[in-house]
Image (tube, rainbow, N blue to C red; front, side, top):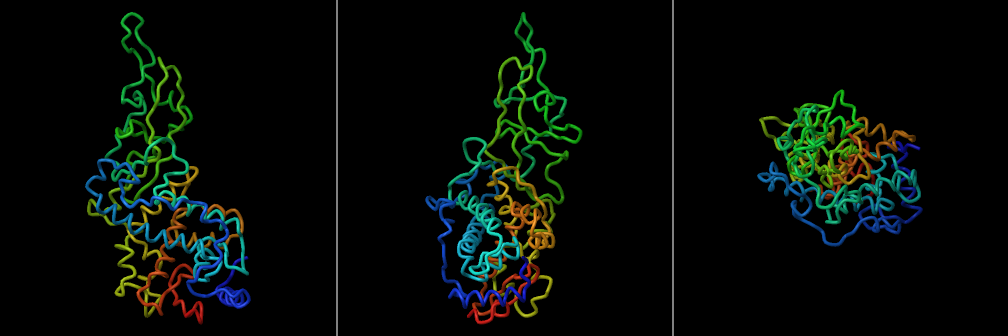
Length: 386
């Protein structure tokens, strides 16, 4: 069932009255064991505690650290909202708006979606608190690179290198033992469709990254997490071999950093701190375009988006970056809604909307994005909340 704005407001306060639930930020019912989904010990605060940094990131540590600090604050607030949404209407509305689930006590709807959303949030929390990745593909920290310049484009007809950077021999001269043939990509990575496949060597971990284009970063791509290296066929190698692979690899493209004179159109607000500054926080005419949620997403949002790819259990796709499509998917009661619980950008919108609500500079004029696009005063959506 999709709760319209009018029925939502009415039902929220019927629920509050019947259940004795406070309408403001008092904790309520954390017995759903959400606390058990992630460790709270040993929280990390340094970017190089969490990532192995590629050479292209070495000059950007200060920027990356600033984004990480901002993300940790926003995610902590989002985690709190998920934990206490059963008793606090503005928190419940976040999950109703962006995921289609209603966790508020007395109005509970689609608990399966809420459980999946909490699990995804918990995976990011675990990583940010120093607990590592749930599905790491190898030992060590994930690799963070800040430019595709660290990837060397390879000819798919050339020979494949192993985890020592040496070309893999397929045949040796029986008299001299000198290599006379090497394994090629098509024989090692047999399951790939090579019609539109490009392969890149990364010297950092002595392995390969695959992409559909000749250049990984572009005028529009801001970042990505590489999928698992395809299965390797030992084939006709003269002896067994291993190809290097990081536990995971997260790429932030130069566009995110405003390099090359280009500016990203999405995730372009300078920072969350500026978003909640009195000069920028929504007030007055709330239908101004500058207050539309997709214009309030900070530059750190790309990094936050990629953390949901990094901490997934599989190679999560991106169903959509579109706010319109995300809001429509939340209204779908079938497989589309389920698909969007895996959509990283849905979590970005929800977390930013929640942050703007909790951290507004005007305590009596906080805004909620109850319909997703434009903000509304909390006092209008929840009369009597203060």
